[in-house]
Amino acid sequence: MAGAVDLSGLKARAEQRSSQQARPAAPAAPPGDGAAPAVPPAGSFVIDVTEDTFQTEVLERSMTVPVVVDLWAEWCQPCKQLSPTLEKLAAEGNGAWILAKVDVDANPRIAQMFQVQSIPTVYVVVAQQPVTSFSGVQPEEQLRGWVAQILDALRDRMPGIAEAEARGPAQESAEPVPEPEDPRFTAAEEALERGDYDAAIAAYEQILASEPANAEAQAALSQVRFMARAESADPSAIAAADAAPDDVAAQKAAADAELAGGQVEAAFDRLVKTVQRTAGEDRDAAREHLVSLFELFAPDDPRVTTARRALARALY
Image (tube, rainbow, N blue to C red; front, top):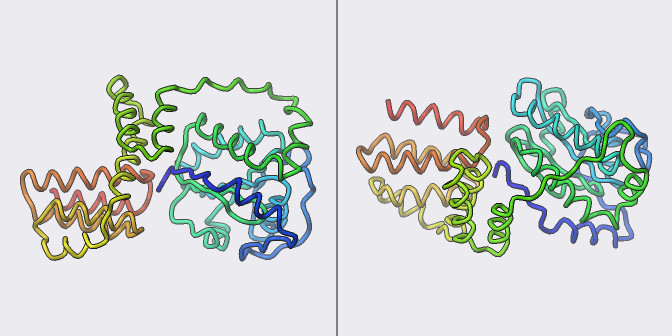
């Protein structure tokens, strides 16, 4: 899902790789030669990477420090919101991690390797393997915490992190003062970690009751509601809905099952067609469910854009 950041297993994967005697196999990547320095010199923490330099600047460097790969394009407006924040954090990191920027239009083979479906998309490469990713624009506070968790999980096993941190912060920038965590979001996230979806939903709804325009809480609430439904999604719901095309509840359940199975376009198309052939409360229910699924993705996701146009035609 757009915006989802999954760090589960990151530390375990790093421990497993560090215990192997043989060097981990690299993903199929564009060829290149040369080796990166163990710790990048100051000023080289943000790198424009091409297919020719991917081996050196990403794979080789990822043996010593995490490499955050920012997949972007010049025409992508959300990319222009996300990239400056990542660049700022990379400069503050002073070499504890590297930001590798990849223009997907100029370097399509890299985009294909990462199976990019929408941009901006960000991957973390460790020991020559992608270990976690997210898509879409994220708030600076969330990105800062995400980077801190990655470094904490890998510090003992990647010597470049400790070497960079030992050098101290870059001279030109003062050490940032971390913003205090919002206890309301902390409570929601802790409930989610426990798998208590009802408590997480209640926590986000409480935030929105006092701050209706809180975009972070709105996005999180949509994600958690879908996660709760997806966990109990029944694959047979698709066949049941196909057999009862006028049953709106069945169509909604089938769309959830399709989305949980990665069939994004099929889920959107099912609900658009349901809107077309229904009226009144049934049409409203199908439309509202479809719009709630749109909220799980970045606004510029081409699948969302296409489905929104189809929904507009179905309504008007």
